[in-house]
Amino acid sequence: MKSSAELRQAFLDFFAKKGHEIVPSSPLVPHNDPTLLFTNAGMVQFKEVFLGRDRRPYTTAASSQRCVRAGGKHNDLENVGYTARHHTFFEMLGNFSFGNYFKREAIQYAWEFLTKELALPAEKLWITVYQDDDEAANIWLNEIGVNPDRLTRLGDKPGGKKYESDNFWSMGDTGPCGPCSEIFYDHGPDVAGGPPGTPEEDGDRYI
Image 1 (tube, helix red, strand yellow):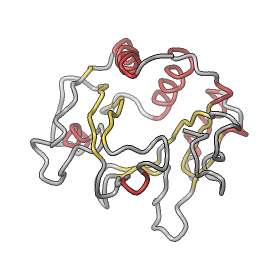
Image 2: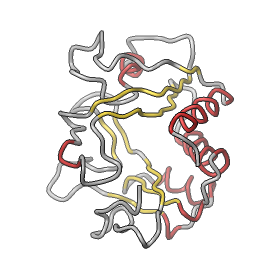
Image 3: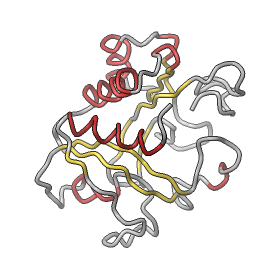
Image 4: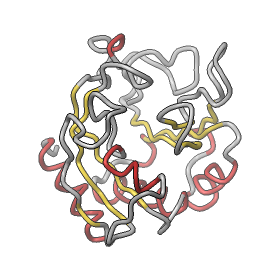
């Protein structure tokens, strides 16, 4: 079992080998973004790049970003202490592409890192995609070879707005957004909780 420091370094080393620029964590309080009280995601320091207002000397990057989620869209406070995966302060490992690659490579990198670099058994991993994201589903099923029984399409939350889904990423009403895919680890039947998207989901079996 790797320590958190070893996992962090393994992630950064993996993406460095894939040609990514390793970018240091930005400050917890953004120095150039008055719209945020705290840095709440790894992409915050790249917002201007995604909005087309900044250019970097690299087209792919990876980082381990210090984050606080205590308000706004990504407010996790009500879940802290109730699950093993919700924290107000944490490090977010992320890899980013600025016009270099898209879903296919992102999915391939994630799967390779988890199953080859960390040697997690593929049969313990569960995949989710947004309900309309046929492109990502096809990559998972037909290129990666994930068991269809371990892939779930998640739609919009009941009573919520269009695209208000655990598998549709956005930082606000405007700006960069789109369908996303997630990978969960199955801790087995001895841990409470059902597969993502099921009524029994609450619990820590799938993280």
